[in-house]
Image (cartoon, rainbow, N blue to C red; front, side):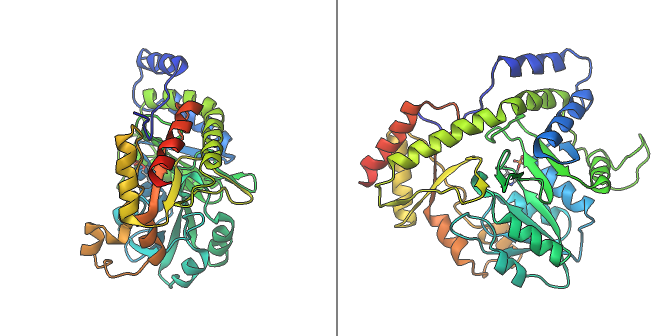
Length: 363
Ligand SMILES: *Cc1c(COP(=O)(O)O)cnc(C)c1O
């Protein structure tokens, strides 16, 4: 089976984790601090604050910016539900905005139209690893005095105009097992703002700046030393592995160029795609997409749908009254998107097999 994702763990990773295990300190310590410094340097920001997941990163980032009850936070309708869930965790109200079908990111013009006097923040998602129109969105947020949070969970190493995803606003990363850089579970907040970094550090650890002095209702969202050791070891290889993803994506696009059933993904000008997912659109829609997925599975090629249901149509959000919203692009994409394997554990022969299976089923 050619899997849709496979974590790459090498001997350096194993050695780093074993060293952490033998160090006498398992909970957050010097390895977490070292991983934070390295990650901040990689993204090109002053601070990185490690947490236990990408969801925790989004939650803490919102709280660090003082987002809470009575506030509205603009989010794209097409993302992993954690993007909007974090807004609910913070006690604020998600306001859904439709996405664009070229980059799968939030539409800047529609985001601007959704701003009200209660809008405090906007979460821009770099879906599949391609930066959304983050330059336009950053300009909008600056002009309207709105906090910009980037959900860069899928975009470690992505960039626009040479600036890394996670460096435009307050960046939130996930190191879940399938992400381009993994610590098993884990996350990171990136920022140039001293006060936001300080608040995030306080909130991830029981609301304490000083041990046993509770200043705020914080959490235990700390990263372990083993996770940080793995993260630092993985970070060294991130660019090379993203390079393999890029080469696989280019090869797949070349092989599928003549296929009229599909729209293949494109890296837009001035953007550096991290190729977390290689996501095609099946023009004919949901039934054809699901049939292609089943056919690929039968031929030993795993694929995936990110995501089959837009967030506002999820049961939780229907109960909260969002179900009747119309987000035509997000709703159409949910029936068209199909992610094909391009992860760096695959060989060129695997990519050729993926393309051959797709062509056999759609030609
Ligand atoms: C993975 C992911 C998250 C959540 O990260 P976890 O580490 O699983 O909590 C949030 N948003 C997006 C877009 C993701 O892909």
